[in-house]
Image: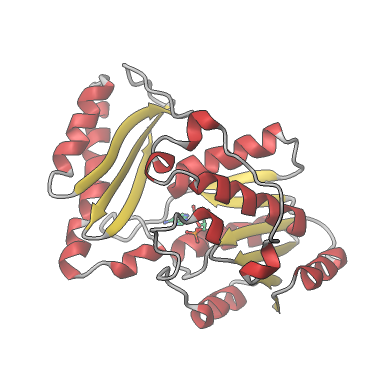
Length: 273
Ligand code: AMP
């Protein structure tokens, strides 16, 4: 595996690659969720590029940019063992200039759900993803369904800016008890780890109600809120898969989305119905 930190080095190495290229952008502190994306990229492509970059523009000023877990050595091992060809680990100076055009996520989606609590977050996400796509020039790029709104906005950017990359959505990887893997789970104390289970339980309870025939979106949201009553809930929504509110739930066209605070840690989870 070649490890590079400059744009110049990455460009040179990219020139040398032949055949299809799978790309997995990450912020590091890797877990089995990241690994599943890398594995899929490895299987489906001739070469695999992974990036690790804690992207400052997607954090709000009061958020955990400084505190975001960084575990370079462990990440290097994971990437080496999973057959990554190029690992790109740039500095923020390498990725951003003092003066440059900004990207704005579409307003109808940028300020709801994740964007509602984190206004500007998706502008930063799209900005860095576009930069990374320009550098890695991937055939296929792998994104987790865990960040459903991000996945949707990236797909939308690719489609509307006519980018030449295929986005591959990857299933959410969970602990055996149902907790969705997240780099932020390391912030959870023992009791909080137990409380965090409420998110996946809420999704399960809601999906069971739908299986039994409940179709009213508001009732489904109440079922989720009931399972989340011990947490500070940011949102618990049953929406269409393009993130629009609907009175009635349609199976195969719905997504259940939750964001809640467990202690000071904000967790998200979702289920595609
Ligand atoms: P991050 O390092 O948090 O930016 O995540 C990098 C990629 O891994 C994103 O596409 C995430 O959606 C994906 N990811 C994070 N957690 C999981 C998970 N539990 N299962 C599947 N993909 C995940």
